[in-house]
Image (cartoon, rainbow, N blue to C red; front, side):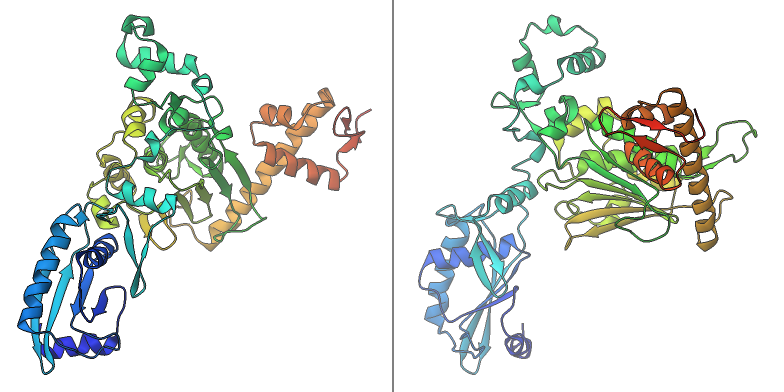
Length: 468
């Protein structure tokens, strides 16, 4: 670095990547600065600079002493050890020592007292929040959320029948043939931790896992236009259950809210989804298996008239970017889930699913939102004739929605004529739509006086005005 380049840095002042220090007198303070840079994107220590950015200067003797402090701090007082580079620049006020620290690949870096330091603006701070520590250990591969015990659950909350069926199908032998008790077998398969189901065990084989892991569901909604509405939607559903159940219900939600096209198939043949089934399958399964389970938030499945969005909590791990995943590079965030999902879901691993999806449907966007800590996949829709969905198709979609809603209403009226005591859940089962769709249809029918509720919600019954 030239004196002119140094002057330009000093003129800009301190920031998250440049720290000014007049001097260092002990190894511990140097180690804390090195660890903070390594944990947060790297940076440069400029020693021999006052806080106001003026050069105080160092002597040759100072440089020798500082090199010894730097060597001890980087090799013995930061774990894992670091390899910073130092450069000396001559100024009119004396020498300035520049210490460059690269972002570390083995985070978190701690000092000799086990403290984790990160940059906070131009200064540094100690990490004390459990969630922040977990995320740093996750980034380094020292912690996997799917292997953590679900403290509120017990082995009784594992669906033994579902696990037995899975085991015997995968290993082609009865469970009893292992000679192991169920707790030991679950532990050997990395489905428990400390005699409790871990997150992978609950999400794969739990009985009603949403009771113990309420955030790990899917919020699905279909909207009548191209923007998100808080109350205007064509269909919505909170999808709960195991990963296999969530996958099945999501595919059903997509199936009833996307266009079906005939293509070159016969008129009476069932139409194919406008976005190929295998593309939706690959993107959905990747979201279920690779989302960040340290973040207590649901996956969101949003259907608009021009696109489908699947939004997963957590940005891409480590140094992956969207260009790399387009070429099949991947990082296994949840190894226990992935190892079993291979045998339960249509999951192939090794990043190949994205490649297959792009080959079948190139109109896919990947958005790594690091500030929002989420990963968005946008699949652009087409009209039933194959064109890009636009304004004209919005009207078609709305008309289709109206027809679907009217069909649901007619099915409800037919059902309650036969049995006036039907519940909302029973009507949803009969008509094949969600309970939310039934609630909306019932409200509309009552507003149009095509249906009357007699008595209370419990113990009451429905009456169709034209029926006796």
